[in-house]
Length: 227
Ligand SMILES: C[S@@+](CC[C@H](N)C(=O)[O-])C[C@H]1O[C@@H](n2cnc3c(N)ncnc32)[C@H](O)[C@@H]1O
Image: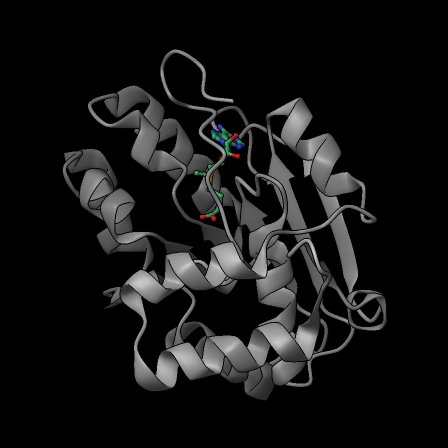
């Protein structure tokens, strides 16, 4: 599923790089509102990031939040839109995260997986429908290089810009459209490699400094709060 320039690399898994920081951020959103925030996963691939976010929202008691995955690859989008399909493999998730996670973090991942996902004998994993249906879950077609996605309180865009290294024009388009997607006072989360690539383009670096406070950097990624 990778095209020649690598832009369609669909790699994703449940709770990919999701540690305490993302839960803290969701807790903060819960405390300050809005009551039913809109959360966007840009470059949502087959949907694992969306389901991982829903599990974290549910932990924080944020039933009713709207979580939308935006994806430009029609095949991946169709797969995510079929809510009856499995959303990943527990074993694969644990193995991948296990490379990075130890002790408490790995225990937490195990707990999240067993609380929110049902895994059958083939190790395919489904989110419990009663959890999923408590949220406004959707997957829509969007190309972030050409237009913003509908304004959202949190925009998560991880492991998308990394495929545009050395393409300042494309990086600029991605950055500008992401920026237009974040509501006033909203939050932008990008992976750390994308942040480094954005910062290497002087115009993007300046725009980030002007539009956001300094990022909070953790393994989850770089979290920017819009001024
Ligand atoms: C490596 S996956 C990352 C998935 C998920 N965000 C994660 O971190 O687990 C990148 C996804 O972004 C999608 N993508 C790449 N460029 C895009 C664009 N311009 N607009 C929307 N989706 C895009 C790819 O098709 C792929 O599904």
